[in-house]
Image (cartoon, rainbow, N blue to C red):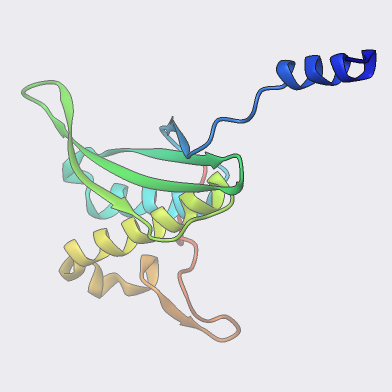
Length: 155
């Protein structure tokens, strides 16, 4: 065997093939300050669900494969404060159905699902206050969910 062949065999032995199959990593985020939708969802919880003393978190799943594009799936978990136990109880999970290329886009989709789910649960409270949080018609944007009025988005 020549020196070139021996060197080639040694290189092949040192290189490891990537692990085949999908791997998933889970990331937990208590908030996403860069997301406008996060502030809208927070506004709904503060305004229409104040009796819950709600907390939320994002559970972001990163799915990777050596031969496929990475994608993200996120769920928004809404917790209700239990005063007696001094703890938070999971009330609901909202998940989006699409695969997204980035964590931020995945969070936006999951928040939109949570937004509509919470909207449906307290519709009677919200219907008279439709211009604060509900989707509304805008002259230039047509139908859109606008930023909450008279709320500081950083709180």
